[in-house]
Length: 555
Image 1 (cartoon, rainbow, N blue to C red):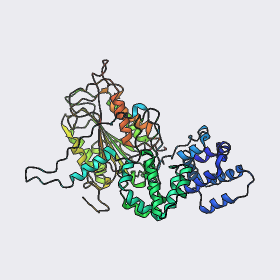
Image 2: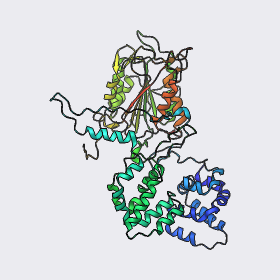
Image 3: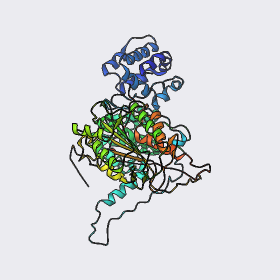
C-alpha cells in the first residue's frame, strides 16, 4: 500500500493522536524539512479555534506534497522521540507500506531503502557473552632476514583493529576530546544547549538550570553542559556523539570535522541478546554509487553449462531439474538465459571465452557451433537475436569436479581460477565495472562433511578499478568435500539458491545477504537418516564493490 493511501486510511485516528501536542509535530515536520519555512510560518499562524483544525491543515499539507513526503512523514512518526510523545501511535497500523519500494527498472534511479525485514532468532548469531569473544592480532613488523623489508604502517593497522574490535567507549571519546570540543562549541553555546534538550539528552529541569547558571565566560556554560552529559553515562554520551555528527550541528560548528569523534562505533549492540525479540535492522539508505545499476533490457546474460552425461564418470541425475530451476528464476529476474549441454573441458573453455568477449558477428556464429541454446520456457531454440551483454552477467556451471576445478564430460578439469581470469576487467571491457556472478555446483573432493551437535597509501585516480573486482563466486561446497544432489529433486545448493532468490529478491535484498540464507538452508539439510553423518556447507567469495540487488521484471 502506498504511503499516501496509508495516511488517507488512518487520517482520522492520526489527527486525534497528534492533537495531543500539535506544536511538537509541526516543529518536527519543519525540522525534517518536510515543509518549507514559509509553509511552517503559515501553519503556525493560521486562525483556528480548535487544535484539531491545526492538525488537519498539517496532515492535508503533507498528503498534498506527494508520495515521497508521505513516506518520510510515516518514517518520522516511527522515530523514538515522536513515538514517546504520542504513545497511542502504536495502535494505528502505519506499517502496511514498505519503507521504500525497490524500482523494477533501476535500483539506483534515486536513494534505495531495502525493506526492513524482521531478523528471526535463527538468522543471526547470538553474541551474549561478556566479553563477546577473543580477538587475536598477530602483528609482524620487523623480520630477522634483512632481505625482508620492515612492514611500516602495520602498527597503525593493529591499533585501528583494536579500536574497532574492542570499541572505545563514547564516554572515553568525549573525555579525550573534551578540551577541543569545548573550544568549538563555545562558538554558539546556546545552540548546542537547545539541541541537547530537543534530543532529550537532558531533562527540562536540567536545561533550565544550565541556561540560568551564573558564569562570567561562555566557556563555563559549555564545560557545565559537557560534564552533565558525561555524568549521565555511556548511552547519553553515545547519543551526544551522534548529535554532533548531524547535518545542522556540523554546519553550525564546521571545526568539528577536525576532531576525531569516529573512534567509537555508531551504536552499541545490546549486550543482552539481539534475539531476545524480533530485531529490525536499520533502514539504511543506499546511495547511487553503493549499488550496481541494472537498467539494461534484458538485465544481462545468464549462461548455464549443464553437464549430465560423462564418458567415464557417473551420470549426474537430477541436474536437469537444477538447470530448469535456474533458468526459471533468472528469466523471472530479467536475464536472457542461454544453455549448453554436456560439454568437454575444451568446449567449456571456448564457451566461457566466447561469452567473455561478445562484440562482433563472428562471435555470434561461434555460438551456433558450440550449440548454445536460448531458454524459452521448456524449449530451447538457437538464439533468435544477437546475444549481447547487459548490466550484469551470471554463469552457472553444473558438473562433476575436484579441488578448485570443474570437469568436462571428458573428465578433464578446468580450474575455477582460470574461469574468472577470462572475465577480468583488463581483458574484456564489455563487463568492466559490472557484476559477474558464478554459481558452481560441483564436488570439490571426496570427503564427506560431518555435523556437530550444538552446545599511508594514497591513490587519487578517479576512474580505475582493480582488474579482479566485481566478481562473486559461490561454490556448492568447501574444498576437499563432496556436494549432494537428489536424482529427481536436484542439488541441495542450486535448489536452495533458486528458492531464496524467489523469496527475497522482491523485497530488495542484495545477493550477498541471500547467499547467507542459502548457506544456512543447505547447512540444515541431512544426507543420512543418522543426524550429522552427511552435511554440506557452500562457500562464497567475492570482490564486489557495491550491493547487487536483483529485482523481478514484469513480462
